Image 1: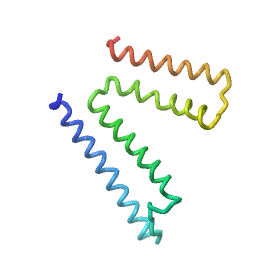
Image 2: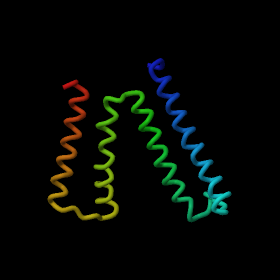
Image 3: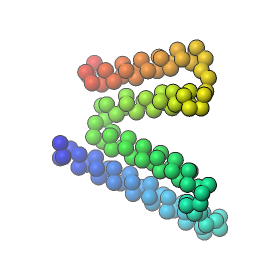
Image 4: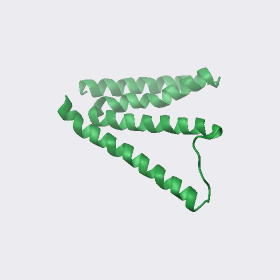
Length: 122
């Protein structure tokens, strides 16, 4: 429904502008106060800028999703911590104890219950 999405898109645009304005102020602060010329295209900064861009994109996507469908956004966004733990286990070879796996299962079960209650209005 395009009529309901217009305010969400406006909010999304304001969120983007907010990040852009803050980044300009930080760059000016670095240049004027700290006397440091920041170049995001230096090889050592490219990865950091990519990570920051990804985080900003995630935040803006969450904002848009919350504006369009707030009922389902909270349970889905709650999986962020679970996904982070699982990816750390897979890619960083982090070791979890049995107790941690148990608590992770409780968190997943709670998120599923939250989603079901939001969907069915329980």
